[in-house]
Image (cartoon, rainbow, N blue to C red; front, side, top):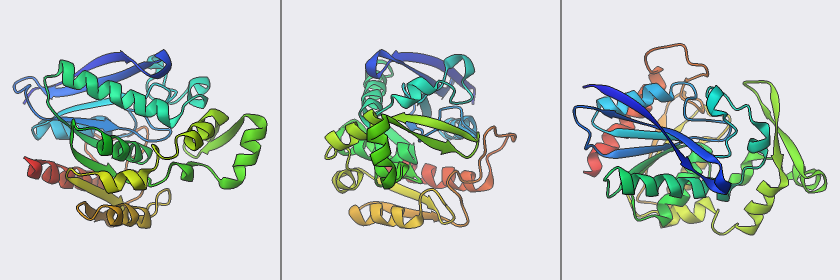
Length: 276
């Protein structure tokens, strides 16, 4: 196995760039394609994401991950969210536009007739929406997925948000307050039906694995149960003692996957292998 990672960029929502990377085995380039979608305040090089990429390539897949165009990651400083102006102007509809652009690119230029999505947290919610509406998605794996975008803010913040045009969300890792413009809330309200994750969950008709830790303070285990109950053909797997990121941190100091994230990857691989 000869692991290789190449960078790419596309024009994303509102003309902003999508920066991504595609990893593959140079000795076997025609393998199935996994596309990974990161979560809120996340990005493609967070924590152990590159080790996850290597794991799937070693086990017979191509692995594509990318930064959503309004995630706030400056390509010159790709190891954190630093562009707060772009971050503040993000909306869920912009993220869905980005995902469509990436999948279209994969189908046109990578010679695949289908893709497999892995989405983490908010990226899990986005992945569910995409899978429900995109015939190119042939299988879905969600890790710690949300079931409603509005859990990302407090209901009582909405009045202040409308009045002032923005609110701040606290990032426990960096100790920063990150701004969100009211356009995010307006987009969510205007497109409520299209952005209803539980409603989309009922429409997913491809194999779907729901992975969830039972010590996740960000997304409680009941959320995974709600998603599983919305789609009885899905399969729910509990990772004992796991937090929201399965033991990873950013920056990640190790050269091997943390044990719980390794278990997540193993179970996801076994599931994806079973689709073929």
